[in-house]
Image 1: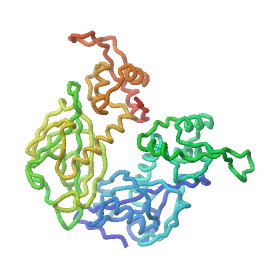
Image 2: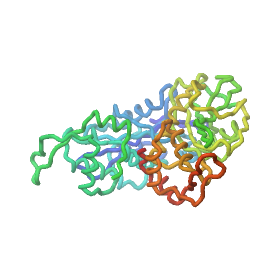
Image 3: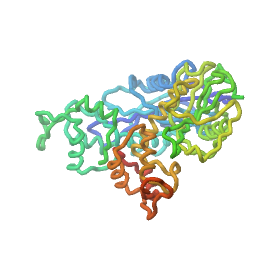
Image 4: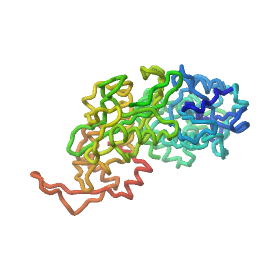
Length: 231
Length: 231
């Protein structure tokens, strides 16, 4: 059961927006739970709960995510704090939100606590969520799209060796847009973050494409310095 | 007097990092208060206080800033939420922080409440602050520097008509770096956000420079879309 809301004070909670990308899927996904208690009983929501008085908020977000969905050891980045007085029907709750982007197939889901279900849903199919969670999801999506304009992503989401088509598909899925193949390749290769391998795809019906891997030293440097990914 | 901290709950506060840039100054400044009560009596701090149960956090930040420093009608952007259990000596306080960049000479300071003084201090001279406020200031500075890499700034900080030297000085002060004059001009002009005027500086000893003003339509568009200001 979730901690009870105290109506006489400002309560503080955490909510997590966990985005998922799998290379064989064409949709960006987000991890949702089904709520097994009021308010919003039976509705889909982001994993979230009240912060305990003896835990740091970052640790709280990790604990709540683990307790409700089974996901552990996820690097969570703080997103935004939502604190409007009307956002929770049972009292005043300010929520600190976090987000991450992971590869769903790397993790097992294990719903527990007041989560009667935990599952990946395609972003494009979500119309409403409990509380102001739809708004939180929208904010997270905007942040994610903004972030990949100036920081490289892909490591951990793609196999160690991947084709440029797979990398393009990753960017296209997250940014929800199509890129010109030639321009995308030219731009990506000009960043020097990829190492071309003397290997090609195996077991494909079409002409096998060259495989690449991330140059981790350069990739880390670009993550720190940022780049201007003006595709 | 500040609201008292309740040791039995997680308290929530707001803190404001107000950066100041005046065209005749070579330093970026920040607005600090001197605390007239414990803890950190007599020490310099960011303006901040507890959130009331009946106010939105954004409104709370505006109210607290106004009450402590007299600054009103400032557009505050949310920065980050700091929630470590050890950050406040009198109990558990999670603080939602905000930041802004304004022109100090446009505003009068009027310290009040537990602020015995409110004044602009050069960033480079600040060595320590009450609570974890030095860390909050560092986070805000990093955010500000990151932001002006992809969003134009300057409107409201410069006179309506300004020289390219004044604009360069603004960027140099905030980013704490020097730019090559030729490259800076080329880059800034290529963005089409400036309108060159058929007017020159008046009353200067050196050769009078051309004046420019912001193309507000284009400026607003760049603020929304972002640009890649890779100087």
